[in-house]
Length: 145
Image (cartoon, helix red, strand yellow):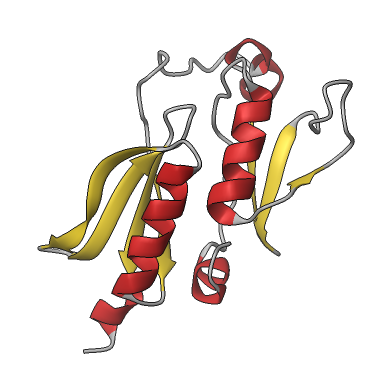
């Protein structure tokens, strides 16, 4: 589950993303790693269509298969599969909370890109969700010193 600080800081909309053919995998990943429940009308496969999760009162992430993305982006081109155009960053309350979220993400099926540890910009960990989207978890503890 996103900790309360992360829920407060994720106050911008995320409506870009592609979802692989395994919607159930993505649905289970966001449930197991972040404690998020999908929102919306359930499709025949038991997963809402489009697959969306409320991050907080002001932010929602929507995972749309690349083939169905045209209704959102019109003539704009999307990146090739496996190409990341952005990193979603969230803040955890402590270094231990970073460790915990990275571990939960890994257990839920994420690829750990950079294990939790000290970097010049703070204590962080980075993972890719099952569709390859990059998430950085940053400790808020660095801002209190």
